[in-house]
Length: 83
Image (tube, rainbow, N blue to C red; front, side, top):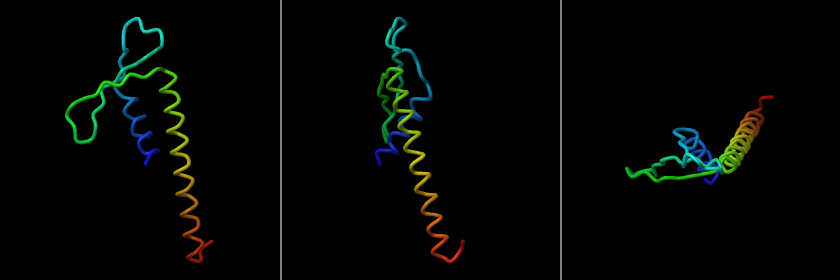
């Protein structure tokens, strides 16, 4: 569940980025995010380093899930007598 949320948050952060302030030295960018079932946006500001870390974590999580799915499919195929 945590990895799904990370991926979802990464997708949200990738769309609609706007600078927090014109003179922001930390490279902060703010987005409007909507919680599921809510019509009220929440402003979320992150630094470039935070976005990079989240993107990396999301990619690693997706790679692990893909590997698990591949191994599961291989095990299922072998248990059915296929090679």
